[in-house]
Amino acid sequence: MALSRKLVQQRSSVFGSRSMSWWRSVEPAPKDPILGVTEAFLADPSPDKVNVGVGAYRDDNGKPVVLQCVREAERRIAGNLNMEYLPMGGSVKMVEETLKLAYGENSEHIKDKRIAAVQALSGTGACRLFADFQKRFRPESQIYIPVPTWANHHNIWRDAHVPQKTFHYYHPETKGLDFAGLVDDIRNAPNGSFFLLHACAHNPTGVDPSEEQWKEISKLIKERGHFPFFDMAYQGFASGDPERDAKAIRIFLEDGHLIGIAQSYAKNMGLYGQRVGCLSVLCEDEKQAVAVKSQLQMLARPMYSNPPVHGALVVSTILGDQELKTLWLKEVEGMADRIIGMRTALRENLEKVGSPLSWEHVTNQIGMFCYSGMTPEQVDRLTNEFHIYMTRNGRISMAGVTTGNVGYLANAIHEVTKST
Image 1 (tube, rainbow, N blue to C red):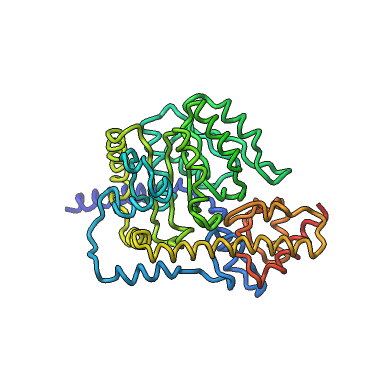
Image 2: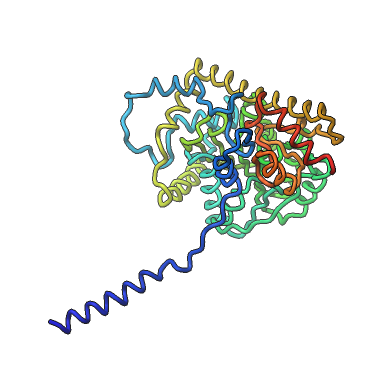
């Protein structure tokens, strides 16, 4: 008995030391550059602090907003539905309404059932699902990602083990589109490459191609046999008009492309925490669409099995009711107009304080973000001297700019850039 106890103790000691060592090699992950800005802002006791780093809409008092149409939709669905699982592909009604937004109310592609589409965990989940799909069925193809882009794009395709390349997009000197570099990169990419395109309100630059430039991009991508994948996180929120914001996609459809689209309702309905979005892939015919959808569902199964129901119900209730949809269109236009108004106010205040620099790009860019052109060192000064928080690439979230802080922000920007 004594010997047995001794063996048990020895084994416990060995297993205990082994279990203690299992995670010793794990190092802390680097902080997310965007979420880290908010953490630093919250820890700052200064009464003058300003957060223009957060990628979420705020009203003119700097407060989060829940749209009236969302509250009304929640009132209508409360207590009326059970909590059963959605199908793996999500809410059929939500997906149907979402496709109409992207492809057009009377799209022939929808009528012909050529679109494979599933509900996704917002835009991030839609991108990841597509990245895994690309890796599984086109493992030889690369994804070309613009410079710069939303940082998470790189994480998504990297973790899906898809080889990445980049293409020129932003021109630092003009603070506009590097169209010549973009076109060259499309032309020189191996035939059959995948290109990640921001449908509107490019994040982080706010720089979008013109309609004519989109037409040329579409033509060249078609000639080279590339596959265009659109991340459309800001439809309606960019210009206030969902139809106008989908123009790039419509151009590609008119040119006969097969495309993929990631859609999200985080920004344009304020459903950030509901994680409701859609992934769609336009196919050659209905048979192919059925096969592609089945594979997308198969990829979703080991990830999360079924998407959440509440956000999907909110979206389908709003878009499926003409009264609520009209209210949504009015509210999303109001959000876009406030952002556009803050762009004008920021530029005017910078010019008023006597900045010798050109700030035309502030009003030329569109969407939630303004790519200011400030250096990381200038951003550091804004934080250290003025308690103004943003990502070090100089990206300003215009949602954080209000009539109450725009003068203070402009003066601070002038102070750190006047020796440039």
